[in-house]
Image 1: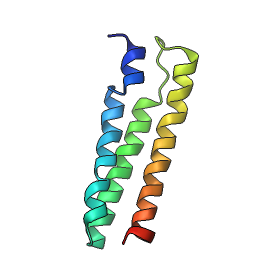
Image 2: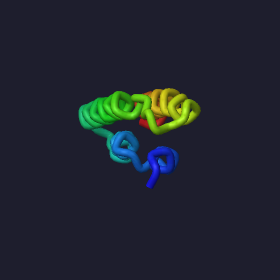
Image 3: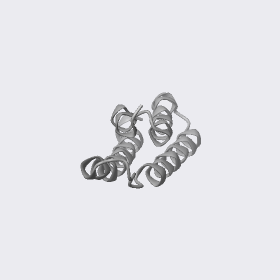
Length: 93
């Protein structure tokens, strides 16, 4: 499979890392323990940042547009994660 196809389908290693970070939002949402929420939130944030570090690197086999989308999408997903964590601590609990 071509690199661009893997990138657009979201099946690269950095994508799975950020997916696991977002999966941690589920127990955070249902938990009422503040320490548990903070630990899971920080773990998810760390996973999102690692995903940015891995996934934002330009790939020589990809076009300029795809590399630009990578540069924008990973930080945007991390910001979305931070917003969900913010909502958890302000509105959901």
